[in-house]
Amino acid sequence: MKFNFNFSTILILMSLLITPSCFEHQCIHSVKNFDLLEKEIPNLDNNTLVIFDIDETLLTRKDKLLRTPLVTTKYAKMIPKDKFFPAFSRAFKEGKFELTNKKLPELIERIKSTSAKIIALTNVTSGSLGVIESYPDFRVRECAQFGFDFS
View 1 (tube, rainbow, N blue to C red):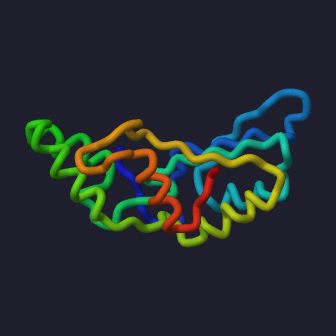
View 2: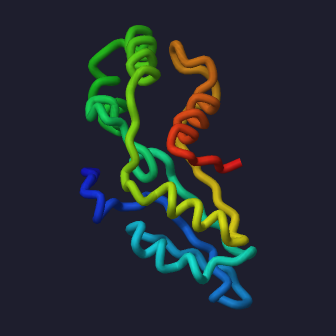
């Protein structure tokens, strides 16, 4: 799958809204861009759960070679695993991130100011990865660099 990194057309790979506008049943809405999500904020209440995917939705690597799925598919197949993961983890740990959309911190704060619940998911290992002792803790620190706190 090819990703379009144009900020105005970022695809939210997984952003689901369970909104109260469905009355007696729970409805799931998949939002394809942040503008659509922003329009839904006035409708959010304590029965709403907003779920974001972190990778390539909230954050992306500045270095295109370290972006997923490029790293996990192309380069991982070319290098033996015992050599790939230590080298990859060092580069990944030192790499810089950027927001996929500069409005995201404000958008997430606006969602948090409602009574809606908000979480972020990621598809990463639950333990260590090469020189990264705890990948989940590493991921939390990545998000914190941009003011994201989903606890």
